[in-house]
Amino acid sequence: MNVKIEELKKEVSDLQEKLKTLNEENGNEKGKVNMKAEEKESFEKRILEIETLMTAKDTESKKKALQDAEDEEKEKGLKLNHWLLKAKYGEINRDILKTVMSEGDNAQGGYVVPTGYADMILGILNDTATVIAKCTTFPQKEMTVNLPKYLTDLTVAWVDEAAVKGQSKPTLTRKQSILKKLAVIVTMTDELLADNNVNIDQKVAALVAENFAVELERVILAGNTGAGDPFMGALYDVGVNVQAQIGANLAYVDLLSTYNYAIIEGYRKNPEWYLTRSALTLIMNMVDTTGRPLWNMATPVGDKLVGTILGSPYNISSQIPVNLGGGTDTAILFGDWKNVYVGEKSGSSGIAVKISQEGIISTGTEVTENLFTQDETAYRFVKRNSVVFANPEAFVRLTGVK
Image (cartoon, rainbow, N blue to C red; front, side, top):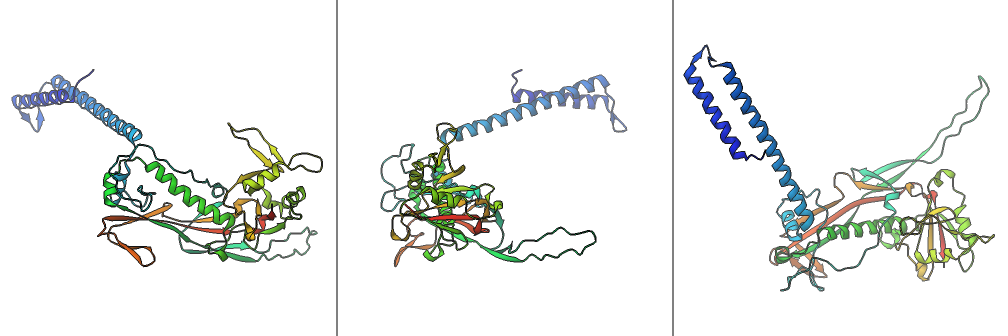
């Protein structure tokens, strides 16, 4: 029945007036209404029916309004200027605010030009990161945390009945997990925030997340504290096993020695290779002593070819350098990446954002910008992580590959 809320409200009002009239006509006896029971029951039943119907229609109306809002959001997206301005004035919870970014001219960024914007954004595609998902992540409350690690294992032995049992005392060492900052400051003019109509919020989120993830992958695979990196990666950690390429060119024996390196089987639960595409190209042309290819094609997944090297999965990463030692060689990494622990600052929701309109920031040597006088807003992004090779002996790096 298509009845308007206003009509239902009027009917309830009329019924309540009739109840009041009956109350006055019948009078009260000891606080009770002396009206006909069937009339009272009829009125009250109808009022309950109407109120139930009104509640249902109100709920239906709210659901429709919410769905319409969601559909409009999906269709149009959140305008970057609206989103950033909400963040600027505290209308968005800054603890869960993930990413913001500017769009502007080639020189400075953030300057408004007297032309319109299309609804699409042209740009490069970033590299993707894969190693983080294979590592062991854990929340870290304090800046520095000591992670205990077994230095020696227990020793057990069979003994005769009633014989003295041998003792075994394991020893512990420690690994330090120290949170480091990955950060960037982005400045934008208030005019850009007010005038920009491009729906780039999804693209912005992807760009920031990808750049942070790729940088974290770089230090996991090839971080070098001697070169100014905050952590040592598999390519430079002193505890990682090293296998040098024997000849001038990559050969079957090099991969076989890496695959069969003398590490305990517990570290071989889920080993994977990490290498550059150029190194994979060399392997795809190689065969073993019986003529079987080292690179084996497995069942395709969708339209992608999935392969293994000596039966173990491989991953292509551009974060492994190809000019080690100033030459043209690279490296191949092999191991179970669960033995890398990645600490994440607990309670920060990943990327923390701070917004300022009144600071003075440096844009170069002895060059500063006053945000207030130049009508600019600065957005500072910080992500805090640690990288710990808990068991570097679980990895082997093949060096000198070319």
